[in-house]
Length: 276
Ligand code: ADP
Ligand code: MG
Image (cartoon, rainbow, N blue to C red; front, top):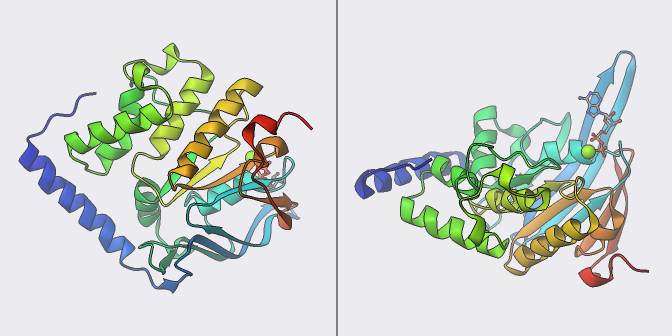
């Protein structure tokens, strides 16, 4: 997919897309500590199954600091995916607030009050999302998959090229730019997904079991890439049932039956996580 436009056209379009996003983000009316990127308050999500109510999230409170890598661990059914969906503007909770530090200065927006359209803008501009399955477009190359969100955001061709090249270099795939997903291993595809999720420079990267489908060696590579982006200042929240990889995060929260029941410090070196 080559998108050709004259420079003039693309620059004016870039401006108009930006101002559309800015209009939404100007509704930043919730105060948030400027050192935080995200504050979650009393988040609750129920599912009704006949007469039975599942409390998928029960009064969850958490914060992510700027540049922090937070892991949320918990067994299957703990509410991890529900949490990612509510933080990732993919689902609406029943109660509580999910406040992003939209301008980085403490003027926050509560995404639970946003419309579907505003959620779409949040996912395009402010939140990066990674899932267990790679979800790459099979007919697009690695470069084009990473480029796509920047096309939707209206970035100029020059900026797109520079940004995509840089991201693919960080994930170690700049030499595979023209390869299709079918020509790459699962681990390589997930590395492309990580690059794609960051192509519009989101405030926060949300990852739901990003290594769930990968073997030990490839899992290590993905965590290594997360740590690289963290070192570059990227804020990350990862949910996983794999408590070993969670140990590499700065802070680890334990989620069970929809409740955060514990918190501890992480920071274990990557080379040590498979041994103890
Ligand atoms: P995890 O990702 O930690 O495995 P989930 O967030 O997927 O957990 O699920 C948390 C709980 O909510 C589980 O008990 C699950 O069965 C229930 N649940 C999740 N999604 C739905 C749904 N769409 N309808 C009904 N129950 C759901
Ligand atoms: Mg899940």
